[in-house]
Image 1 (cartoon, rainbow, N blue to C red):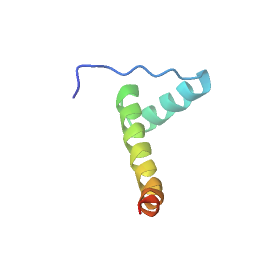
Image 2 (image 1 turned 90 degrees about the horizontal axis):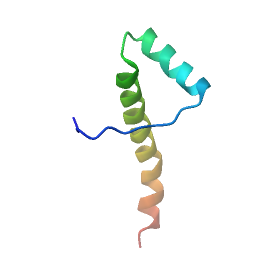
Image 3 (image 1 turned 30 degrees about the horizontal axis):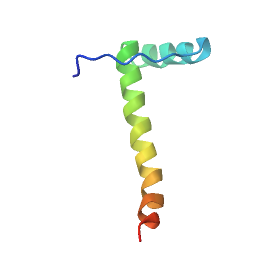
Length: 57
């Protein structure tokens, strides 16, 4: 893991949702945030891939 932390600003509602998800899965808040970022990035790559392929000549 990187020794350079990433700080993310969350609204109180977002923080509450993150805390709930982490508690439901018996994970730390930072571990849950990391997993959500990984899932979101994977999702964005999957939906962006067809557009980037069609944009190539």
